[in-house]
Length: 153
Image (cartoon, rainbow, N blue to C red; front, side):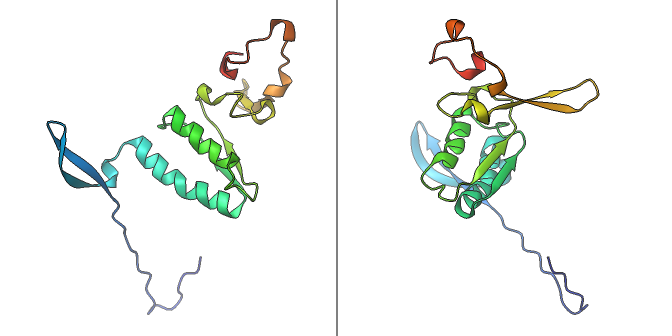
């Protein structure tokens, strides 16, 4: 970032107003449209809007995107679709995604491999210990069915 050193130079700040358009209804029929300031949208909608730029930038240019509390305020199915972007044909540069989440619904065999899932546990001293799902051995004789999500293993 370059800041002007000459007192005659000014930094101009531009604010963008983001609007969302919603249909207006009367007895189930659309009677018009209303524009609302984006700040009135739900947390999930604003989070999706905030994530899409970094997601597509990382996929287009490569690199690693790190997101804390990824699933917070997002519907699980939307989170799944966002994760699938990193497996899509668009990801030609091998971009990677590292997330933390409390959404156990994302722990699915059809979405993530066992070596891609890590658990964090706080020690009594407050340090976090990491454990890979690979470290947990599955007894094939007592193994769960293939259609049961990993969260129930």
